[in-house]
Structure formats: C-alpha cells, structure tokens
Length: 168
Image (cartoon, rainbow, N blue to C red; front, side, top):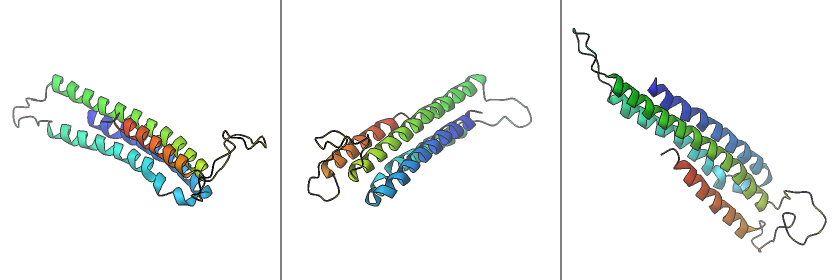
C-alpha cells in the first residue's frame, strides 16, 4: 500500500502540472512561437517529480523482507510496515504539493513571458500609452520588452526550482 501511494500521488499531480503548463505553452506558442523551447522547462520539471516517487518506491521495496520458508514466521514487523507507509505518504503528498505548485507557476509564468514578449495587453486598453500593462517598452531587440521578458523568465525559473524542492 505504501508503494502505491509513492507511485500514484506524485504521478497524478505530475500529470496535472504537465497539463496545466502544457496548455499555457500551447497558448503562448500561438502568439509567440519563438519562446516555445525556452518555456518547456515547467513541463520537464513536472515530469521529474514522478521519478522521485519511483526512486523511493524502489528503495523501500528492497527493504521488504520475505517470510521464512516453512515456518510461516513473518519477519516484516508492523513497525517497519508503518514506517514504510509513512515514508510513502510523505513522498506522495510532497510530490502532490510540488506538482500542483509547478503547474500553477508554469501556467502563469509561461503565459506572462509570452504576453510580455508579444506585447499583448493583459488588461483592457485605455488608449493612453503612458505605461502600465497596456504599454510594453521596446528596448530595440525587436521582440518586445526583451529585458523584461528575461526578468520574468528568471523569476519563473527560481520559483520553479524552489517548488521542485518541495518534492525532495
């Protein structure tokens, strides 16, 4: 039971995180195709969470001892079973939280980087180009606010790294 918790909980949230980040990647790819390969990082990081559960499951499966043959004496105690169950739940629930966090950060991060790159207004335009969300400064790079795009991308990457650490 503990091995199934380790494998199923992170996998469900990993799939949700991959889906959430993938939808925003496709949405951004339509508006700005040049940023697709750069913004694949949340999908890859969501996929790594399932590997953490697999590693812990293999380690714990190796620690399960078989009963002695002929005597029907079980050497796998209740204490060891409960310790393995708690380890599985700890790994599974932390993977669940990390996958959800990566999915939400990936969704909003990829969309905001794509919006900033393609100079798409996030709020309704007032006709006034004095600043705010409606006006994106062009720094001469030709693709919109290149410096702002990189700042948003680095911020998203740092948040993804710290949310991935939840699963460790």
